[in-house]
Image (cartoon, rainbow, N blue to C red; front, side, top):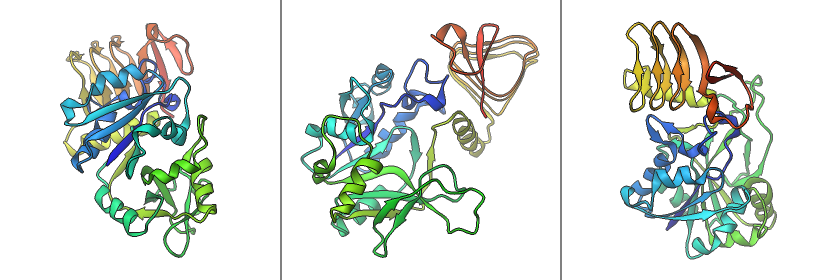
Length: 319
């Protein structure tokens, strides 16, 4: 069995952290985020993995190489134009046609039992099985609605976070098990998304798109706020509240709490940082006061998409 990790997105909601790398290549606890997906698949015995690339694809190649360091073999699928989740699969079709395969996002950290999801897929003779979780906080993930057989009927709107009387909605984790027959429902050689362009068509045609509801842990790091908050959640388990990359220096009189510092960061005397993400090579000047922002070097930005320029840096509120 092979797998595909989706790693071609622009990561616009994580800007400015993605100005020089794609979203799956940003560091999470000092390791490129996509490495967690690769290790997850390797642990269940999947040793041949396709990775699609588009925006800043070289940053993923640098993180993963040929896969040998992880005990796997990687096939890269380059997209000249972004193709969407199912368009990416179609582009790599020649690498996925021989057997059941798994697809997942390169922006998640999870311990979901993939073997159990594969067992569900096989027991229901499904063309596709989507791993779902309860959306306890009613976050902005589309609702997934099931029929009486426990298979997927349709995809709904975002849940109303204020409607707590409604049953807890289900959301799609992005982890899916697929049969090669799914390619007959993917429009060839064009942009398409699985949940809008492919699965509804397969369901309407009478195909089983099964649901596997997992209780496992699943963290999706697609916004600046989620990136910081989830990083801090993991650090708290280690009795830490900051993490520093290589060659980072913090002056003795500086105060740094609940923050993520990448590589070669310098925090000067008297500076105070709380809930701050600091990119590579940033210098925080003496006596600066920063709270819940992301900071990168101004000279790395071709254009300022949001935030403000402060001295040598661009400062973006986390929201």
